[in-house]
Length: 254
Image 1 (cartoon, rainbow, N blue to C red):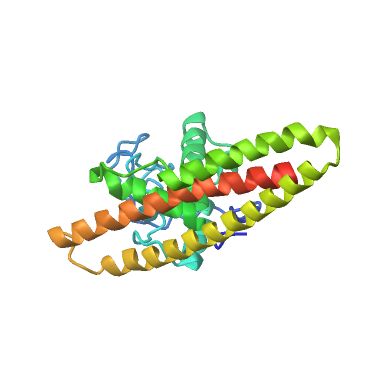
Image 2 (cartoon, one colour):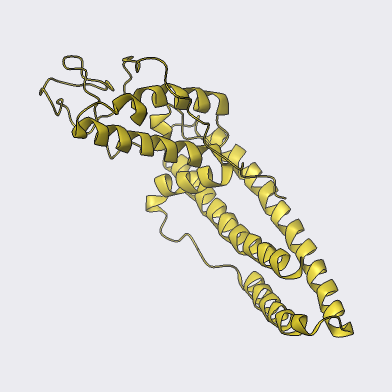
């Protein structure tokens, strides 16, 4: 197991609502500056102040802003969950089952956005991948291929796995058992390598969060961020290759 386990269910279950949705105002960008129903001005309210119709969230809204969190990699998970529950009470489709089709569609869209955002921010790896997508628009040279040594190791493992699959139907043999032992040793080596990657990621997470206190307009700060983004993307990419090979080894050899 890695240092970043993904929970079996990353979305809290929303209980059947027993009360009306909150009308508490938040400063979140809406899709329109005017209510789609009565044309009244809306300035970040979830519900129109005049006709009390639910408003669609802006398509430009990112998940960190939606949950009122800074773009950090070590976040306040309690705040994330509390905000998720609060917003769910506003957008949950059960509140709009008797409303017209427009409100139902907006509720479903907002709720889907909320659920996806919660799932991504709750998991450290998905959170990092999402933050990189948000921040790395100017980082053009992020590599998505594994380094040569890892690529060669993956190719060799794939050949060994294919040989194992060919021998397995014939039952027990000295060659099969020797290959099984080799593959299990290789799996342990890959699991150790994955743990080292995740330890390195945690270090870079802390570096990234510390940088958020620096003036964002300084070229030196931007370059430091870009360097960290490249480093994190490289580790995440390599971790994916390693994790997939570990999963393949476990599935094939048991």
